[in-house]
Amino acid sequence: MTNASDLIAPHGGTLINRIATPEQTAEFLSKADSLPRLTLDKRATSDLEMIAIGGFSPLTGFMEKTDYLSVVESMHLANGLPWAVPVTLSVTEEEAAPLAEGSLIRLDDPTGEFVGVLELTEKYDYDKEKEAVNVYRTNEDAHPGVKVVYDQGAINLAGPVYLLERKAHPLFPKYQIDPAASRALFMERGWKTVVGFQTRNPIHRAHEYIQKCALETVDGLFLHPLVGATKSDDIPADVRMRCYEIMMENYFPQDRVILAINPSAMRYAGPREAIFHALIRKNYGCTHFIVGRDHAGVGDYYGTYDAQHIFDEFDPGALGITPMKFEHAFYCKKTEGMATSKTSPSGPEDRIHLSGTKVRAMLRQGELPPPQFSRPEVAAELARAMKQS
Image (cartoon, rainbow, N blue to C red; front, side):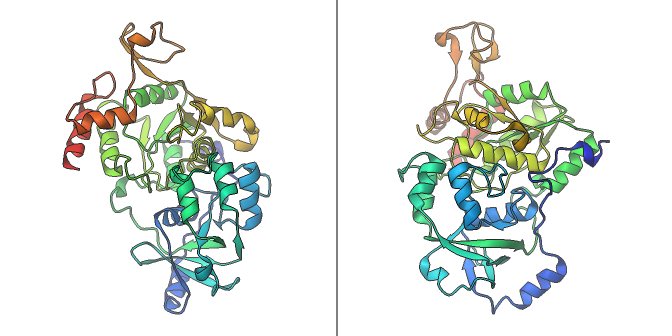
């Protein structure tokens, strides 16, 4: 068994826990009807959850202006710690006006359930276009991340938060493995080196190839698909998770791989989000993180390997997690196996690789992706889901 000291430290050195104690929860509930109330959208609800369980360590709440500006401008918190994506709670001027700094704010989820409390320390305005250009590298509202920024309120509310209760995930309770639990699991298995994998897409052969290449060099693989809010045209989380279950049942060594959910929401911030995703996995206990082609990208806003290049802008010691950079993988007809341009002797005509867009189009037309692209059981599951949608 591995000792806790053998595991990678959380970002900032301490795993944050902002889940209210039973006594705190009772106190907050007693004040529920007297507190000013805000309703969170899906992303803010996910952010509250991720802060509370330590997934966003060292954040203890929504960012104050000094941290927000530092992150937008330099990809570091005000104390110098790397952090690439703002985590903010935005409201309209009308919503912000009656809220007093120093007060407690009741936070409800989109269904109206009381889920958390904000200790309001600061209200501040911000430059939406500056955030868009710096974080997303575009000011076009056709970009889904930019559209969120433009559509949200003009005032950010900042301060520490509390999550009233850590409830089981409604869809994937057995895969809800929070950072403290994943770290304990890694210790139990004796894993000192763990590689994390992020995806919002169904797993295909290229994913499998790079995951197994990475697994050759570390003790364990942490498959960590994102199940928070995504674009409306992304494959639903329950379908993606079923595809991962199929892979776990048939194609992965059970003792070397752990499947768990990442509750956070997608930003589609490309390179910056690659850093963000890596730091989240560091908090879960991963020492390495897979960065492939166009990580967290959307449309043509980012270069194919920009998400890999951005890691070179940081001091590796400050990041504290090692990126594992992979070329675009494909099926090589000549060698009859998966490969990349680094390992394949074939030309373009002997390489089979399909985009997610092309695969979705095939499935809508009732066609199954070829076995060189997707395992047959996974293709069948995708086809079944597409037919029912």
